[in-house]
Image (cartoon, rainbow, N blue to C red; front, side, top):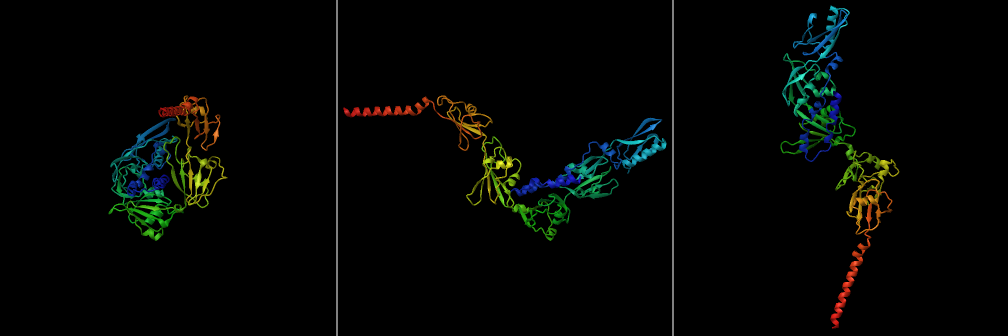
Length: 500
């Protein structure tokens, strides 16, 4: 149980690594998250009888059904029996026995000895056929007061896990026994230390009382076990950090440790700065809903910025360039910084081959072929980064532009392995009033021209010239002839008027 409980505590704050501007809303969201740890580790045993057969320490429980098998006159014989509510059981002609307080292992020895005494050499063997169940009353700070069903191996945490509220205490869970005595248990400490005596097996007649907690405090950042913790009265920040959070990590910037506290009088939040020294921690008493933040020394590292086509998918419309700040260490090369980016940052539309670095406060422009680094593992061009560098990764459009004398000019989706003619057909074919033949100009994204045998690549441009003689005449020579004729006609008209 300890393993899963602690793993949950370590990751419970993964979603809160960056705090939003709406601090109050964020803190309220954390309310009750300490109880989620117990809910996550509720034990479920689907095959209870098989489990009991392997655990002789199972306490014999009212409602259990057993069967003892033995040889009688060289024939296999079996006798089933049932555990009554008072713990007694009737073994037929072997008599009645009391089982209260016995474990399965002890009952097995007792019953088998009774059979052996009556029938020597009968090879008796006791097995459990089904486990019993009993009601346990649960009340107090719970979502559903009432009875829960327990069985012989039901521990306290199992019965209350799905009934806890945001305000239920894990540190003060009371069991009132059938004889009227009571005892309080600390389930959080039980999980922390694997001390099952603090998470006992519940017995018939027990009543469970859940009390509200006193304080719930949240710890985020560079501690060995971040999470949400319920504190007992008198416990300090030192107890929280060193006992429950298992101390600071080596990356902890203890000089910047601070507590974000809700201001219940004026509204909003207050930030209290503390020293990580022991006397400061020991004298500070956290309040309910405090958020303790332990910053990392890594936050002081210099930063570079990855910009451009990051996290975009093929076919993205109206793409927006992303900008990711990224901490770097001294002399770190671009390959290791790139490898640390989150999964999915680099996608097929990230044009790694045309990436470049813009150096801060200079006009220096450094081309760098990231495609060789990422896909070819060629590190011959792997420059060191400097604080403030901008690593720009352009967008690679998976489209081909078809223009000129075609029916529907525009951007066509890129399809691998196609020639110019297939893209012209996608554009509705040649406009026969403007174009004759199959003459086209093919230019790549860098302006290089290619012949018609080229396999078209993303961002190529295909242009069909308007070379039809009729089109040229109607749009160039025709207007000139018409204009010339009009000028001559006007000149002759004017000349005739003046000659009269």
